[in-house]
Image (tube, rainbow, N blue to C red; front, side, top):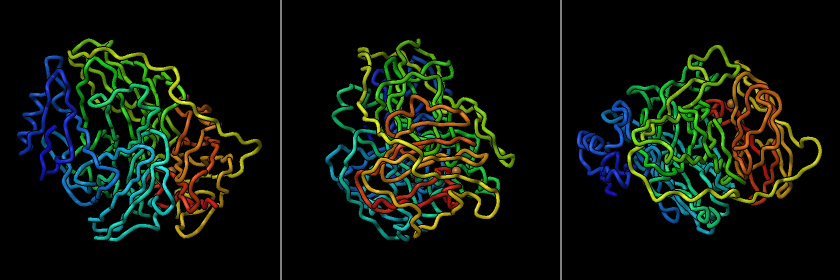
Length: 491
Ligand code: C2O
Ligand code: CU
């Protein structure tokens, strides 16, 4: 795979298809790039020319790399680009791949005009390595991360976490994948290489202001919602697929948008994993809710579709009780990724094992040990947990290390709140009110759970590795920046 050093796309490569031939970025101008795009459409069907071919990010070695956050230029379509802030020049930033037992050593370098710090969302790290807002570093400074990889395989991600600045930095383009692989997952024979698709979803304004960050008063209530879908930083992406099984690792890195993933033809999605890694068994569903910060690991088999078939990965419509102030409501139907079946086929995929992973359930009797009430009042400090706004130096809860607790998250507002906990994963036990069920794809381990208005979600939590102070917060990035966050201290 050729890269083109020295220009904004250097960290990216095309997803190429064996039978269609490589669509290689040979370097040079954007004009050269789009003629490459054209030559990549094979006899099996032309993609929609107004769409942008999906690109995969480059990679960063976990065992010794620098990760520079700096202003740059993001290409947003075949012909347009936008000023952005990027990790190593790309959105997504370079993918970090690691295996248990490896020692991660990454130096963050702050090339931004404001403080930043990186949080490894879903990766279990000591509190000093977690990117707590107190650890933010100023422009020109660097932060040396060093921690062992101590967990099983899964799709994780990294993004800035400086207080009041997270939303703007993510929106301007700072986010990347952190993938852990292990022997258990290897044994399943899941699709790899060109059939392993990383898809970072965001909604943006569809024009040259796509990466500008200037939320208005309504955005600060609902969170910033826009109406144009971007995948891996590209507007309305399209992807050519062969007649084989593909793995899609899908990340919601939006500001506030919740997706309900589904296929345009109503076909089933096979979900094999979520935030914390593999599910116990694959589940077949028509749709998957994906709140901000959540991940879905999904298999789609294109063998049943004729060459030339066009499908779309969509966000299906849904309704939520919602603030009337919002101009772009949650639940908007969106075309997230066009999928064009080429005439290429493969040797055929072996059946998926019925058991993916064995996950011991956490057990705890009795009433919830802790209650967290999420409120959006619309005035003053408007997004609160238990009546409090974030004070990064205040400890709100002390949690004994190694003990299983039951926590209840109650959404006492008309806005969705995707609740995220650092420092461990949890198991979703029940959801009462609202949708009133736990979806099969919420089994296993989670680090973020979507709590819709008037829902109570009970989770079982155990911090079993690292003591210290970890945040619990809403991952709607406007809510988070405005203080919908507490500190829990593991003791
Ligand atoms: Cu993805 Cu505290 O964040
Ligand atoms: Cu929220």
